[in-house]
Length: 359
Ligand SMILES: *Cc1c(COP(=O)(O)O)cnc(C)c1O
Image (cartoon, rainbow, N blue to C red):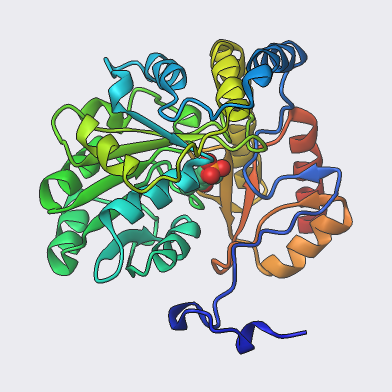
């Protein structure tokens, strides 16, 4: 047996830890922002039939450019987008990796505003980029001025703006995205993984794509479409950007099964978005009820809430786990991050929090 330390691993990977949110089999899982609802039976059946149609041809490589799926994403997103403006990967994490492989790499830098998605520094590290974290204001909001100043100071090659932001739930205004797109010399990507959960869904950076050819907007089916287990993320941008991403993807990276599953699921977007509405209600309920209990939930446009005012987060985390409820300690002092669940799951969470606070 050898150990990691004995291997000739890249120097810049020594001592790092991989992404690793706990995967525990407990009754109420509110820790990784999954969609609390299972894939509806009728949707699952349609997906299985679409896969069944694709399977006899599995001896051939899949459609390398996934044209049908790109058309389906363009239709779903609207805003006049064409299939030539769409890219997809096995989860939006892969899409983000493609972006950094094409536009980042050694000697280049990725700037983002922290606290933000914990994968950004790992993705930067993976392609040998410098990671430039710029702290947000105390309430986690961003202003056009702050974004312009950070970009002027650090002159990054790539800027990631997460909106709504994970783990804080903060949505950023389109004026902030515009400021970044105007100020940056390189690529600006808006990670809209939680866009469907926003209070105002019309506030999407998709509306700015026409004006800014170096602006990219990424989305995922993991959250709104309850598809975390299938792995489908996508992106909209200028067709030239899509050409750049083609240079770094592995050949045939989207399997025929993945393409079939996503195409079928997108046919049911109305039904899936109705469940998103139900989850938005539970998200708002968590904010209202935990505030009434004296905690400090941050305003959220995502399917989770970052809750402040928790005296001992590690202890609250364990006490909730003892009651079969898994939440996330993202390492921000005095906080826990809680994903909105079904009404029943949310009731269990709120009852447990009330009990713990009364102790
Ligand atoms: C969940 C999440 C994603 C989506 O990841 P997938 O690889 O598509 O499952 C992307 N960005 C952020 C900020 C997320 O929280």
